[in-house]
Length: 424
Ligand code: HEM
Image (cartoon, rainbow, N blue to C red; front, side, top):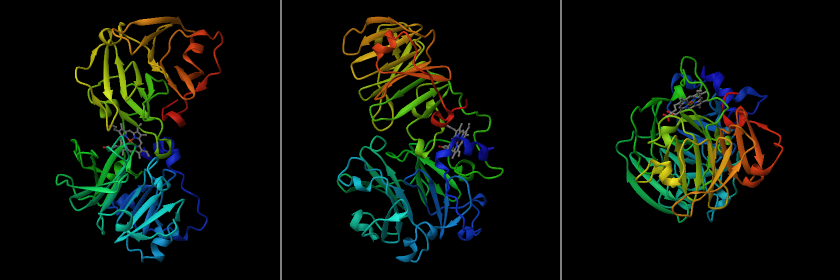
């Protein structure tokens, strides 16, 4: 049942504050009856906020509350009919980075900026003052960070018109996405983009607006826990035993387990398994090893290697997959692979670690070291050192050299369901 899973998988996104005074709860709306939402956005803690009329739901389960109990000023400055649109700003490095993680609400021609459920000074403002070129009476809005869009942007929806607002230089590009239903709300969840219409939703590509088969889908089935509605039946959460793990140059961290992958650095917004083919279209079945080098991600499956460009969704480089022998000068299969700061990929094969210089042509094994493990499942190297995954545990080493030379294994850490979204 989804309610049961929700508690497990979404612990971090579900932190509904306990309210003693329940007087502002109101049974006017039951979202399990099928609701067309006015706006959906995550807050700075990762809780998904769903708006309808003067009501609000916090998270994927729980009752409706009055919106003005949390966001008073929406009512004070503006008699709250309903919120037209909302999004959580992603602007980590830009000139206006002080707005990063602020939640923006749009009502008629006004915009409100909140952080920690507190209205920012000088707000509300006219939409045009903050987002020049964006019309009032919007239908929906959603943030689109660099890496998913070409630059840090916001997509505003009004009818079939989509305004892509580049927050770096305040420029707007207008497009018409006729093939998409009119979105009354839009939501970015774990890098996926959703347009909500009626009590359904349609997933779209944030750059092209492209929609794949199988949409629309019923919102109640996926974004809330309702009796008699659910999804993922027949799917268990993946076991806490990895096939591969990597962190790419943009800081995205992925674990691969069977035919599923889990993004690990989105704890705030939730942890959820997706099929590997959803993000890496050409890869079917489970993978043996994955490593990141430069702006590319390398996926090894038996004796083949796939190389994907990481920028704005993963695209396979022409000519791939190629035999591993041709690319790295070794025969498959391999158990794990990782790159630290240098140009060397450390490939683990049985009890050996093979070092291959990625700048040399042709590529060949430069050095070979014995390892203190008989079988390693996955390995990755990041700012905190080399993590080696064996069964349900991992070991942390300060460097590849220490992994190869240390006589005593460090204390193992558990691959916890909490951090990895897997089943122990
Ligand atoms: C609160 C908990 C959950 C929420 C909010 C949630 C939400 C979603 C959403 C929004 C989608 C994608 C719909 C789409 O893009 O078309 C999805 C897909 C899916 N979910 Fe969940 N889910 C939850 C829990 C689970 C659990 C516990 C499982 C099973 C163990 C599960 C299995 C799946 C599967 C197999 C898919 C399809 C993945 C794919 O096509 O790559 N979900 N879920």
